[in-house]
Image (cartoon, rainbow, N blue to C red; front, side, top):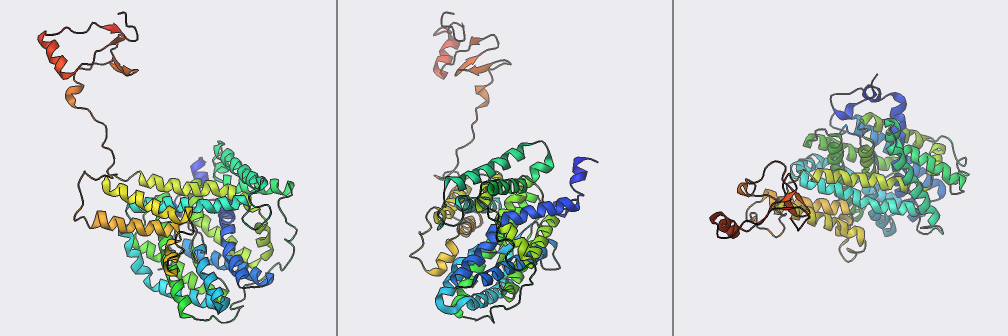
Length: 511
C-alpha cells in the first residue's frame, strides 16, 4: 500500500479524507493540546474576577471543555443548516473576555454574563445568514490580509506562553521558561525535517510530549494535583442560577458577537484556503449558525461564547491534515475531558512554555498561509494600499494595547482585536477601491507597485547565443567584451565618423 493510501482514503473533498482510527485520534489529540491553554484561560479569568471558589472555577473549566467539544463536533460533522463541515476547532472565545469582565465588575455577577451571552448569541444566530453574504466582499486581497493578521495577532499569545503565561508569577520571563519554549520549538523543527511523513505531521504533538517530559525532569512540571478532585462529573446545567438580563451587558455582548462572527468568517475562509476547498456564502452561514447555536446553549451549561480557534487553523496548515474527522475526534476528546476532570487536570499540567514553543510555529504558519494568498494578488495602486493600510491598522492594538483607551467601550470592543481591525479596514478599503471604482486614479498612484523590468526588442536584436553579462559587462561566447555605446556613438561608428573600439578579453585591459 502506498504512503498516500496509508494516510487517507480520499473523499470527494479534501476535508472528507478519512485516516486510520489510531491516527485520527492522535492528530485529534494534537489539536486539543494546541488549543487547551486558550480554551481554559477565559473561565479562569472570569471565575477569578467573579470571586468564585476553586471548585466553582473547576466547574467552569469542565463546562468549557464539554461545550467546546460538542460545538466542534457540530461544526465539523454538521447537520442540515448547521456546521461548515470544515476542520475547525470550536471553543470559548477570548474576544469576549474583556467585556465579560466589565459585566462582572458592573455588579451583575456571572449570572449577568450568562444572560448577555444567551441573548447576544440568539441575535447573532438571526443575522448569520445575512452576515454570510459579505463573502463576495472577501476577495484574496481581503482574505489574505485577514489571514496574515490572524497569525500576527496570535504571536503575542505564544510569546506570553513562552514566558510562563502568568505575568504575576516569580519566574515569568525567566531564562528557564524561555529556554524550555525554545527547546520545544527546536524539537518541532527537527521532527519536521525527518524523512518520515507521519513523524513530521505529528511534530507538534511529539514536541509537546518531549517538552513536558523534559520539564518534569527539570522540576518545571507539577503533576501532584492531578489526583485531587472528582474523576467523573457531568456539567450541571444552570449551576450558578438563572441568567440575569441587563440591557447594557446585552448591547456590549452583541458587539462582541459581531466581532466573533467576523473572526469566525475569517477562520472559515482561511481553513478553506488551506484545504483548497470551495467556501461559499451558504457554507459560511452554516458555520456561523453552528457558532451562534453553540454560544446560545453555552450559558445553560455554565460557559461562554464559542468561536473557531485560529491557532488550530495554523495546525491544519503545518500538518497538511485537512480531514474534518480528525478535528471531530478532537471534539470527542474535549467532551471526554469535560466529563473526566482528572484527564483535564493531566492536560492542564502541561507547562505553558511548552505550549508557547509550539505556538511560535503554529501562529507563524497562519501568517505564512495569508502571505501565500496575498501572492495571488495583482499589486496595482489600489490593492497595495488595501494590504498596507489594513495590516498596519491591525497591528496598532497589538504593538500599543492602550491605543484605544480613550475611545468608547463599544469601539474598544471592536478595534482592540487586531484581527477584527484588519478585517474591517480591508473590507471597507476593498469597497472603496475595487467595488466603488468612481474616482480611482489609473496607473499613477503614489502607492502603485514598481512596474516589471523590461527591454525593447531592438535592444536585444544584436545579441547572439553565448553572449552574457559578467561583472556588469557584456561578454561574448569567446570571452571578449562587447562595447556598450550610446545611440549617438553607434550612428557615428556606422558612418565611419569614429572608430569601433578594439575588442579586448574580459578582465584584461591590454587586449
